Length: 236
Image (cartoon, rainbow, N blue to C red):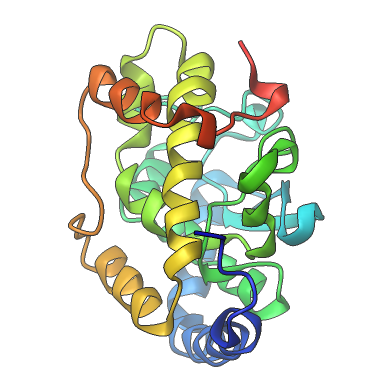
């Protein structure tokens, strides 16, 4: 099946939904956002918001916004984060646990650089290096949540158990995310997006199976590996 990149919902309805939902979300959450920002400033100092270049729709770079959860000394370090990472502040650990650090991305959604649902935005060297059918994913705006996000909700714990977190991410996690996101692209709809958003809010993982061991991931990634290309920059 060819990826669904021309459907009415994907080309028009999805953006309209994002605009309305992001506007309402920012209005409702404006006070909690201000309180969290003030708490970060009082406990950790500036900057309150973490900004980083990610790859967006059509492979164009954009700046993602999150609440800062790491020490300022760690902001230029590795882009791979594992559970128990010493760079994460105590407050940051709590924010990450409940995904509150992601809420400022509503501003990205409102600006049109992100969507509520889609592939998570990666740093350069991953999505922009996709080849073949997988490049169809660049038709999507990166999302705050999505099927791959739900499937890898425990990603930091998985990386912490890996002997080489970077290789594990590049060889196992990223190709599996590509496969899950391609499946989403082929079936994208308003009903599916609403389902994924609700599952994210209520921490449900029933949309896709959760694998707890490296063997499970390797078996999943090995099936049809030719259809799940890894980026050239991530070859180990």
